[in-house]
Length: 477
Image (cartoon, rainbow, N blue to C red):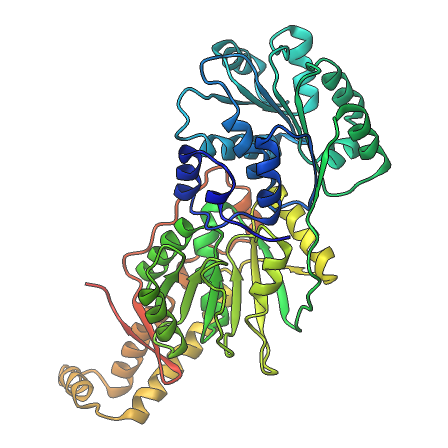
């Protein structure tokens, strides 16, 4: 199944503007197939794995069909967990950013019901919720479905596995007969087929069939991180493994720009690559990457098509790809020509863990979970870098300026050994100041934190440029 452009799917200018602001460059296969069908009023069965962009596949056309003049519930989205309900409602709010008058409300267990009462009383055209809490509101009369136009069952197989079948059928029986019913499921079990037969009208099956690809022999690991810790986690891994060339994949153009700004502010020679850049600029960036004038290339999947560099040491999935095939294409950029390659994937929350499990099933390979290195693990590498830099400087010679500093200090009654030790300490601090100050804690400690911190680039970290196999640093002014 082919990927397409959002502009070819029949969406309004407001929806296209929202998609562009979110930074997506192209529609996934399931979005390309499902959006026109839903816009046309068809019932749809989406047979697709987690993490293929299903929320946009049903969310964008559902928002398009809402009447903003009416405050009654017109779209209901049922999700198996409150986490998925919150995530879906947040994404749909972004899709509706330029659709004035449309309100989207999540309802789920664990949140004070009084708050949900107030939201429903104020009026919401789109409700995203878990079956149990939706049923509770229906019994109380705070949710009425008589004006419903579209019912979406997201991850229907998960809802049935949890035991929501009776609740789902109760909700569906109270929906108007003239409605669209959209169902997405990773599997097509007998129970799922029974639901589609009973509650959908002549549904169109949209199945994403992936081309089976071979995954090369690459060391694959993943890390569970909080969203605000992803920039720091990337910097830690770049420092620990010190790859000569790294390719970092993001799902959106906006994330590429944000991450490049963070990396540059933290001293990494990094540049970005995405579809909004002029071709001449993209070519210059690629030339700098191939010629090792930059160490880290941050790119979207679309922009990286045709990228042919054989000696990439590591690939980072900064965002979990929205398509299993994208994962295979991404990590296939390393480990070429018989060399050892590494891939690292950052996973945020349960939906992305499920998406990664689907990827593992697709590639028939286990991806190992590891912890982000903190503190002690970097200190030994910092000392090694310091020794390498000193040896390189000795080999290059031209030490006259340095000798003048040593002679001046020796004139103040310091020995040459003391002066050398002090300068080595300063040099080591340049390489490892952050590593030594890092708290000795595990990733679990970070994940336990309730506040999602925004990464703040330290003001003292040097700019780093690789040259002839060692680091040359200069401090920001």
